[in-house]
Image (cartoon, rainbow, N blue to C red):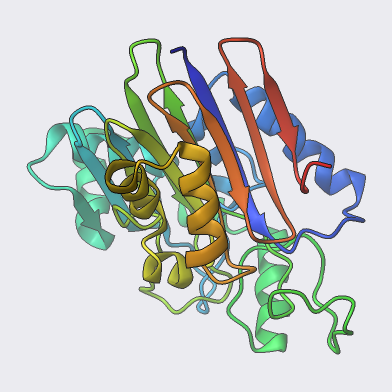
Amino acid sequence: MGWAIALHGGAGDIPLNLPPERREPREAALRHCLDIGVRELENYPHFNAGKGSVLTSDGTVEMEACIMDGRTKKCGAVSGLTTVVNAISLARLVMEKTPHIYLAFDGAEAFAREQGVETTDKSHFVTSENIERLKQAKEANRVQIDYTQPIPKEPTKETTVADGDSQIGTVGCVAVDNQGNLATATSTGGLVNKMVGRIGDTPIIGAGTYANSLCAVSATGRGESIMRATVARDVAALMEYKGFSLEEAAAYVVGECAPKGTAGLVAVSAKGEVTMQFNTTGMFRACATEDGYSEIAIWPSV
């Protein structure tokens, strides 16, 4: 048994010819955040969370996040945030300071002000890059996951993967300490061109985020598919009820339960095992363990 940590920065149709100026900052952010966690990932505009959150169909930001303690099963979730700098910090306060699990929209914003959480003007999150992403999504008449390259107006067979979306986004972190205590946290801006008020898998316990005494899981991808498959909880359930290893459980859920091209996850077990699974072209991911192993990768390892 030993500590382990794993991060993701989104799964999807990440092109193999991803330009270095888009790839390298994300890899550097993952490397840096192995020492810090998901809150720091919210501060990088290269990921779809916090500063980098994508825009709704109205050109606004609605961020969401979730955190869960595997030992106690305490958890906190928030949705519909428009001014909170670090959504995951507010989710933790919901877990620690309220009798509830989930706060959203005006109620969540009011709680943030009450708790003195750092907030900023809504315009802070509306970047020129995300305005362009929304414009392209509207032109293509698509609701889509954050992407790294413009969508061709007339996609060819070579570029049409996972409904033509080029996808990255949601950030997440799972960790286990030397005593086998597990925790998970996930944060996202949602889908480009999503309807105002849409809530995805990230703040849904058991869908995008889950931890118990056996494992901690953070998922990423197309939220509606992840919710239908209860991805995070199913990994834990297969370990609990079927005796699967962490690797076996994650591989089964990603390979058999979630439709191809829609999901990825990072997970750690109480034994210090790590797995990073996805059924998309790639997933920005990183991990480190007490025995000295570390990995930062995007596409499948060969």
